[in-house]
Image (cartoon, rainbow, N blue to C red):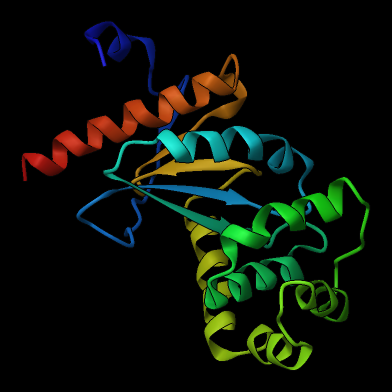
Length: 196
């Protein structure tokens, strides 16, 4: 990125520095973490642009998703996300769950409805139910909730870069600027990684 880009994005306007930096999953890369919920229409609206960005994002960016629990009906869907993850089905199921809720108005807000939905992807209800209430998924739910509290995530979708910066989406002109700010912060963090 050219030098003039560095002046374009300002702390307090385009992003804020988090009070307490968090740990990242892979310290050899720069983490970009999306906080989202399947029940959130704004998360659904950013999904197509996010999918495009993920195809072209720099290789040094480690993209992670974290479902939040502070919205009504969010926990069953957060658990469903971690079941997808455990089964390696995020790529196949992430967008269809959004579509089912927002486009087709399917009420996927409880375990039986979700188990039935997962069946379309070859997951038997018994296997789904075991994972849904498993220790592993419950642990991830607690960690996700703690992370969104630690980072003081004000709503969704929101993006945190390398456990340090919260992108201030409300102040951005458009979705392109969202990814410009993310990449600007990621590049800044990559420089810091290289100098360590």
